Image: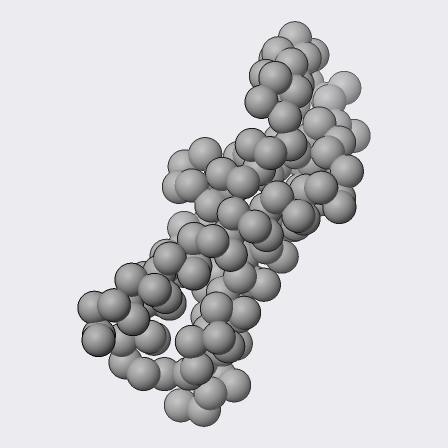
Length: 146
């Protein structure tokens, strides 16, 4: 398999992993590293960029979800949205550093869109958190292979 296809596959896996759909980009990255498929720096860039773009999709979807809050099927009451907004403000935008954490990370990025977190701080905090996580995976696999 060519390096370009490996990187594209990892990018897509990481993109999907950042959405509400299940995927395991850390395992994919670790497996590719262990198999010697691709340069670690390129694997890091593919995984990080795909995962950040998937989170950006969540943010965008969250920013659009309130367009439907007057519909009967809308899953959140105005009170729930206000409580969530207060909680999000309490911990602040730096909470997005945890966007990589399983179970809470994807809803956190969706909530950031719902609560209108500006895109630049969103991208800064999400990118830092996700890049740090992938750097740890690469360092861990590298240490095991050494």
